[in-house]
Image (cartoon, rainbow, N blue to C red; front, side):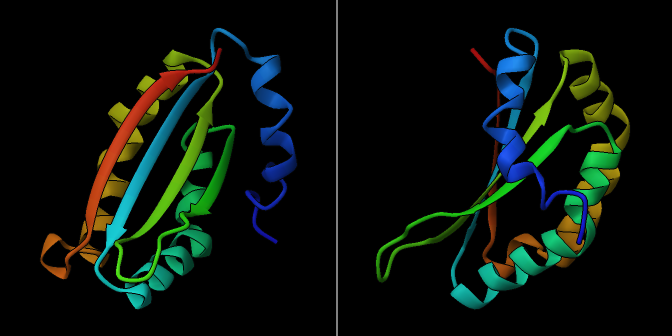
Length: 122
């Protein structure tokens, strides 16, 4: 079992413990096919999420969004960093390499689009 599997329970508890300092970092991936969406989820679970956690995230959760027939296929990955400093270190030192690997695996010409957002837990 990889290290992120246990966080589903923790995600409901930990944000309260880190209130006012915890950073929510969300990556939304949009795919033109369910097959690419499935491949992305497999890739995340095969090691990418573990690498983000090793790079400073406390928790991670993969959410397959409820998209209707004929709509875009979306996956949200929600990471929680204990502090802004931990998040900034991840963005400055770890994220560039992981993003490069992700873009190699899921290049823009494959039809995938990514959006990222950052906020604080309240």
